[in-house]
Length: 490
Picture 1 (cartoon, rainbow, N blue to C red):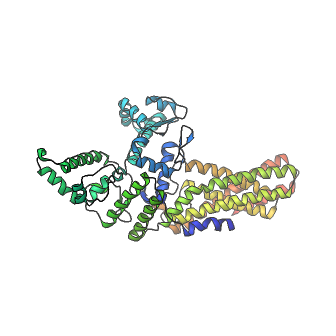
Picture 2: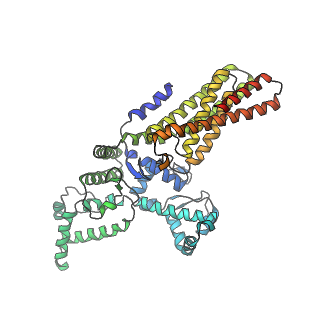
Picture 3: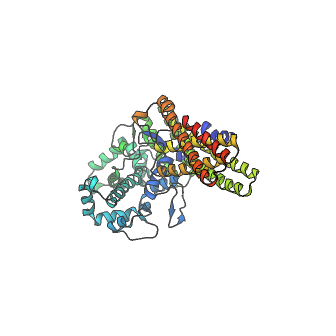
């Protein structure tokens, strides 16, 4: 248990925040940007780590990839990020074949533009009449739209507008020569309106340097409004349950003090990221998170805990230890060494402790039992199976418990990973399960029964196999029969 205590220290007490922990409202829950970025990188790219042409991308983590597309949108539109493995889909979109099956946003958009009748024909089809290729093409199109919204979601924070005229600087309260963002002008719209009104009231033939600069700024701001549709990033809090995208609060509405503060800090954060000042970036991230915690009374420590959980990849490690235990157990059978059996038992015990830690992490993060989705149920069933198999091994000391625990743990982990690849595994509860009492009693009991039933099934299969290859070992067969019968009665 010492391992779990050490690993859980960070989960229970948390740590300083980073830009990966910045909160975003998506799918009904507030999550860290790290989870948001991992889920979308998995959706677009098929993996949670980014590579480019088989070389590790300089910013390999999902969060860094997300910030790169935030701060370098035009460059990232050319990066081959979309995974299209079905050659029929690529051919339908007129995409050139490549060995990596990956294409850029601009390549795919050009493909749709050159085949507009294809998309129209797919939209007119009923879902039941759509082929697999049809559905995959529609999925690619939806991913393109989602990527476009994310790419330009914080474009209003980027420092792209220069004001160098002393008159304009003084009136707007600017005391530096750094570029300004669209958000800056929206936050100071009342001052800027005065300058614009003066511009409109002055005949163009009498414009001075101040007027010319204001005209250029107004044109640039107008051009940037084309990205107002990019409203999928809900990072600006309205209240605990309603959050807004940056572009949504750029429509001239009155800003609350909280929103004004958050907008200003986000401007500074992205400016620091562009300047490659990661220390400042994290300082601004801490400031945003602390303000949100004070005003909305949200448990922001869960954000860093979820980020840590994402980075640890706990269930992959537990499965590795189960695999190691299986192979060491095989060696112990070949050379009949009890010490090797103990090593195998220790390996599966470490895997089980990591498995337990992973479930504990999910319970702390989501504040509920980990049995609400198919993915969680499979991982929990695996936990119950390994637990009871270890109890049998501790009592019997004949490696059969290790065999069953390792096989069951490995098999169910693999099944769970398949469902984890579908996206966010820490989703909100459906209405019928939205009760911790119901989850902690009925659902958990039923899921525990699944684990015990699978364990009994594995023991029964082992009994059948041994009855064929070792029919004379009545003592072993009787023990297996008794154990299987006892489990089925639980």
